[in-house]
Length: 102
Image (cartoon, rainbow, N blue to C red; front, side, top):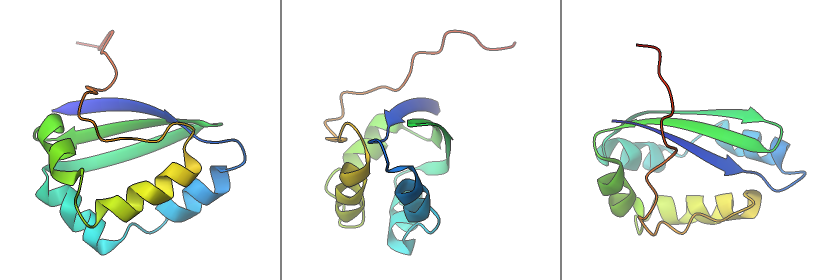
């Protein structure tokens, strides 16, 4: 499945966010793939971040990563950079698809 997400950076954190994402920890890469993620792309427009995630089951991935030892410190680092911290509650389903070129 393909899921689109929108997050927002805290003002002044653009460079830090890009620097942190320049190298994803190996253990996080392994955890994401084990949770069914085949691709995760992020675009930035100012403070707005747009993610497109290709994943077998988005809800299952979120559940698997919520307390994963590779993801917990990563999310703590992201909380320092993002305007709204991701609580991994599992309630989100991503952005609603409005239109797609058939």
